[in-house]
Image (cartoon, rainbow, N blue to C red; front, side):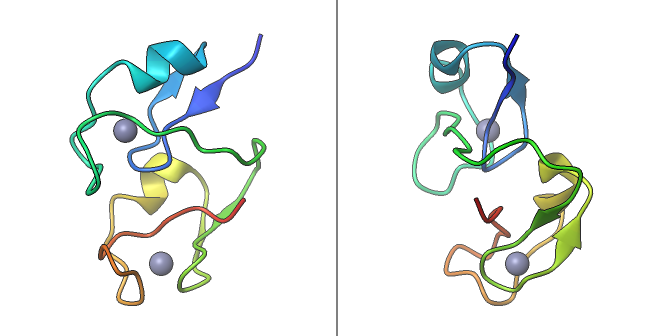
Length: 76
Ligand SMILES: [Zn+2]
Ligand SMILES: [Zn+2]
């Protein structure tokens, strides 16, 4: 079974439709979860500042000084 992550908050769902149909409190561009299109990794790097995190949910809990939205975003 596949797991799909929200790139804004790290929420996990078993289907893309389940992910994108529920609301996200951290998406600066809308109010729904948005799919993280990269593969599952043991470590995630922010595409803006390069910082390393053990999970997407861990990454998005801190702010990013180099991101236009002030949030880290996982590189694919
Ligand atoms: Zn989300
Ligand atoms: Zn960052």
